[in-house]
Each structure stands twice: as C-alpha cells, then as structure tokens.
Image 1: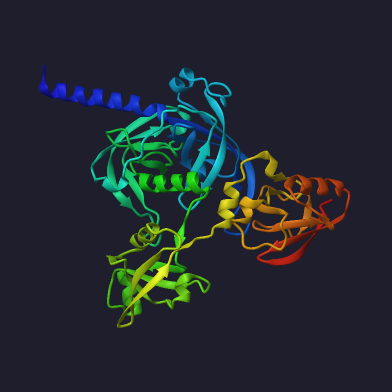
Image 2 (image 1 turned 90 degrees about the horizontal axis):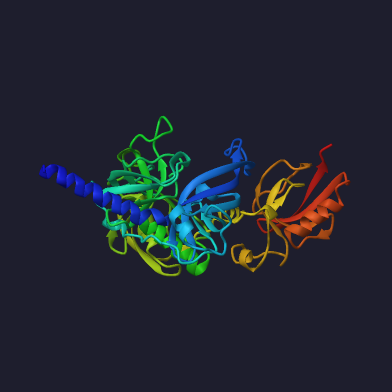
Length: 447
C-alpha cells in the first residue's frame, strides 16, 4: 500500500471521528422575528417587519444552555431550537415539541459582542467544550459546523487565516479569520480545532457575491466564555469602560496633529460624567500602556480593560505633550440600555399594536438596568414594529409610559387594555418619562 495513501486515510478517519464528536453539540435555530425596515440612520427608532431568521448554535452546558449570534435571534418573538437528529431520537426531553424542536427562552442578546444566550428545558445534552482562543496559531486546522443556507448538519475544513482580525482599526471587535467555507446559516455555529474544542462562533463572511469566498470570521471562544459566564452567573453581560472615546493613531493622524509617535491610542473625547473625566484625563491625551502593558492600537486598549472587574482600577500611563503621567482609573459598567431592551423582546406579549411598539413591564430586573425613575410601575418602550393607529409624537425606545389619558398603566397588558377602552377617542395623551423628564405625548387617531 502506498504510504501516502495510508496517511491520507488516517487524516480522513480522524476527521470523520472529529465530526461525529462535535455534531451532537450543534443545533439549528429558527427565529420568528421583526426585521429592521427602512433607513436606520434616518430615525432614532427602527420600524420592524415580520420575518424568519435561520442560524446555528452550540450547546454550551448539558442542562439546556445554548450560545449563538445575537443577530440570529435579536428581536425574535418566537425562538425554537432543533437538536441534532441523533440526540433528539436518543433522549426523552420534557420541553420537546416534535422532530427534535424545543421552544427556547432568550436570556440575553448582546449587540456589542453579537452573542446571544438561550435556554431550553432539557438535560443530559452533549455540550461542547470551549478552548482558549489565545492559543490559536495561524495555519492551524479548523472545522466550521452549522446549517449553511438551511442545510443542517454541515461541516467544512480550513485553516486559521488570522488569529486576531480587525475589520475597523478604530473598533475594538476582533475575529478569528478562517478560509473554512462559511455561508448564511452558519452564523452561531462552532469553529473547532482538531481536538473538537470550540475556538470561535462563526459570525460573518466578507464577500462580494454573498456566498463563501474564503474569508470567514468567528468570535473568539474567550469572548464567548466571558459572555456565557456573565449571563449565567449575573443575568447580563459586563461591558467595561472608563468614560473615554479613543482611536488608533495612524501615520496620517500623527502628521496632521504633529505627534511625535505613529502608534498608540489617542483620546478623542472624555465623558464628563465618567471616571476618566473625574480624574483629569483630557482629549488629546495619548494612552501608552495599561498596567505596564504597552498599548499600540484600540484593540489592545479595549482588551486590556476587558480583563478588569467593575470597580477595579486600571493604571494608565498617559502622554500629554512632553509630560508622562499616571492615572489610577476605576473601571465602570458600560450602559447600553436600548440594545439590552430590544434583546429581551422575544414574546408576542411585548406587542402593543395600537401604538406600534414593543414594550416591557417595568419590574425589579429592569429597574436595575435603568437610571432612577419617577414611578415604581410603568411600561418601558423597547422598539417599534409599525406606525400604529395614531399620528403625532410617538414614544421612542427608552421611554417609560406611566398613564394613558390619566389612567395609570402598570404592565403591558394594562397598557393594551387602556388603549382598547379608548379605541374610539380621537386624541390620547401618554404621560412618559424620557431621560429623567416627565412629558405628555399627544397622539391623534389616524382616520
């Protein structure tokens, strides 16, 4: 027998075994959702239209915890998960509907990381193990699993093209780049190493045709691990910040500003209510290092802050003109209210068709996410689905509705009921709190 043929057979056998090992931990995800329609940049609210999103996901814990991309499920009003056929047929699960389908609860959809965590009522599931993406090497063999173009239980082979690809030099997001074939429907599926451990979550492709052209991008497994543990342990994702807006210094920027260096991070603005402003950082300051680790670009700066817990202090070495200064700056929690609210809209009960909005009842969970409110009870607007039945100044995401024509509302159900009682009224007045201020929104029936 040709020794070369024997080696190829060994490789083939190993890949077969690897696929058999990983496939049971990969799921299909179906999301009935509201898709953004219209010009997102033109309005401070998004019109939403019905649609179906199809993607993939991984079982990250045997008791029914699943990770996928946020863009697969965000805004979904009904989310279902289909287990691999072999897993579905070999287990009797309480929450199963049929054909291996489960209703899934969206726990968190985090737009900053494009990761979402789901929960299904099941146990004894085959969970996949996360690798340390910091150990990845360029040229390393990887396999991408998922449901490209709806073709479930698919796998493709490739290599790691880059261990830390930045699409925008001024954005902190990094990806694992691979030439393993990734197509629409692969989103949320695992990118695994030759041990079957997850090194990334397949997220997007760079393509001129819309299909695979050998440039696939995956969210690193270390980010996946951090998001999952935040959600499971604390119910939300921590995003750390010190209250500055910064960008990578480029040769062109250095030349224009007369800087004496062509790398590093320059602070463009300082949030006047943030930790950095309180301690004296200024626009134009250059960040040289964080805790003695050099910072040469915005990615390194963001990742260095990510390692701190909220409340811990980071030591920043700053260049200001010819001076070198040190600052001990406490790391704070970044607030992304609108993204977190729309990520929690996953049920038909959120719809208020009369106003064309998606809303959530204010409870203890939401109060912890919001600045102090005037009233304890109310309804918070998470997004828009249509124009609704009225003309006038409509509520926007983040508004808290307290009353309709003087009638207090304490839940989404009571808001719908109050509007139903007033369905023949020509004019309604909503009392809302917006950015800490009470105001009336006057709406007239669209006849």
